[in-house]
Image (cartoon, rainbow, N blue to C red):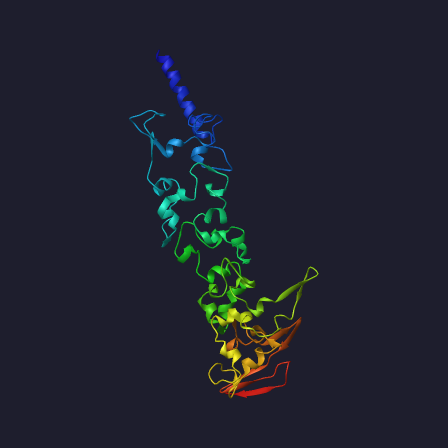
Length: 343
């Protein structure tokens, strides 16, 4: 009898070692059968405890009843709320700004505890399907969508759990934008920066998408830099000449006073004037006027008033040759002879 007991103990010990060393069971665990909890261990993404039949790592059986019973739930969670997940996973909700979904529903607001057809056990596909269940704006498709937004890569800019910055951003603008738009990193090195740029790219560019090119929410004549002809991209002159209309300059006029372009004579609306003759209006407000970006940089530059060193005319680059003086200046571009102005 003693021999039989020893043999049984040896077999049990061997079985324990065998099961512990096996990452997955060949047979369905007793919790998951064709009749009970069917399919809980099937899917593109399966939670390891469900996959490896470690159900009791999260579900603790109640001592006063056997499962299944008709007395309601026969199990209690090993811990409450997110703390259950933190038994294995690192805490994700320790940032200054915590996702409201975590505050309200914990991890299970976005993640399935057992299986999913999406990465990270997400309940829905990231983007419109998942984020759009709470964020109505994520359901909308802007006229010109930001590529990461269109592809559902919300987590490229937003931390889905918690972050030190507003709106769960992983970085503040412009550092965030520089991650993809490397050229934007050069703006800070320039002598003069456009004030909205210094404050953040979102002042002009809409991070999810805009109504006009370059993710602008209002029209800008510089938005027509290229045109498509017979399937090929070709530089157009639409970004150089345009007939003035306020709606074409709507993006610029969000900050700049339109009087600088509409009043023919002024001593206050603009510093670019000869006595009271408005030189901005002279250049812009006409049937064949020029656009702001012909003479001015949009983001940053090395000259006062963001003036360019040269202008682009089709495929050619022409010098602007502007010289600033104490009470005015002079301009000798390729388009006209040298002109001197004094305020």
